[in-house]
Length: 168
Image 1 (tube, rainbow, N blue to C red):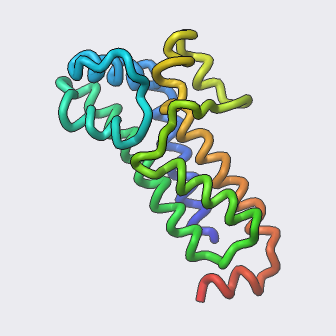
Image 2 (cartoon, rainbow, N blue to C red; image 1 turned 135 degrees about the horizontal axis):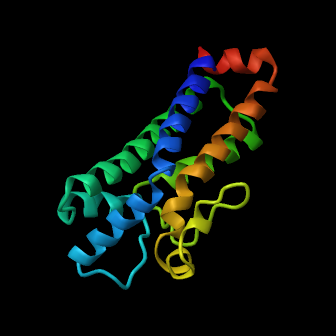
């Protein structure tokens, strides 16, 4: 469990750095959308960000921030897999984990996803951007981090026997 908590802390540190560069991230997505002649549809999935990075990203700053986002998503996905091996779960912890796995799925539709208070990532976007284009993709990581923290909090309340059973 301690390794999982340390991994989550490490991801949170990377996210803090990423969060400081949110405007760069949104600008990179905007540049890619322009290059793809795809200005109407919102960013709907991790898969779409991956595709933009591979096919429509034309400068190193944009590539760096898009790859940072994709790297954090990959690490979150791996951590979900690690959580599954720690213990068999309860209905509550399984619910958190199922949501995490759905959200980090490459093709999951993020367009309606919005981070709520205390996260202000969506507030940094213009109304049009928040409602129509980037609200889901900028909300993804903070929502998953919250779910993982909840998973850890509930898992730590489980009897030791349940935790040891999952580790064997």
